[in-house]
Image (cartoon, rainbow, N blue to C red; front, side):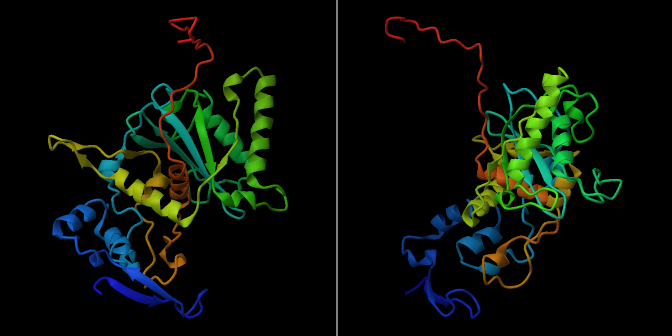
Length: 326
């Protein structure tokens, strides 16, 4: 039967020797050239189409994780996204026991347009590299987050656009690895460590009479399953591309990056899939050139970021018909 084949799990892998049925779309007799073309158009690159629809595991070999990225289109000048009536802010965090923790801020508006508006990667060789040669701890990163999100006039790049502006993060997402991590100095998981750091900093801000320095560092777990991340990668790739409106006019991409976020841009331009035939899901993962910030972005996208209208404490419902409550 056309489009139907068997593939045995390779030796050395769980379930080795078991035959797996592979059903290609050509097994459907109704799949004509027009339908295949329409299906192909839904993918952001030919390589992704071949991997998913032609069942070519090696299709992404050596490919950039985001071949849709184009610095001239996706990297844009900074502007103010602090107004919660127009933008909803998200933050992603990728913790590590031996290397720096990466942080990324993402803003989305009611039209679905999103922008990477801030980053923190305090590692050697980066703008935030520790000058004394000591790796940043949770307390250090928490203080940096507090300063970036406060109304400080001294914020460094890439937060210069937010100087004097209070940033209100709607949701924070962390790699699930944070539940199991810790070291000799930090014997609790990172979710709890950041939560307590936020409480400590907020209490100090209250005592000092600085309400704009209150910071709540409560993180949700990222939906990190293979399918969730694969879907996030594909959706991010689609959002990086330009599109056409009904009149044939070119529309800007829905995902951009403030051009001062050098580390994020560098990762977009360098992270690739490994070369060689992929035999397992592990083989299909992107090379960890240094993709901690892109991981943060993917974690945010697994939570389906969207614009959320802020709630007002003084909003009072006044019914038009009091007797009916309507």
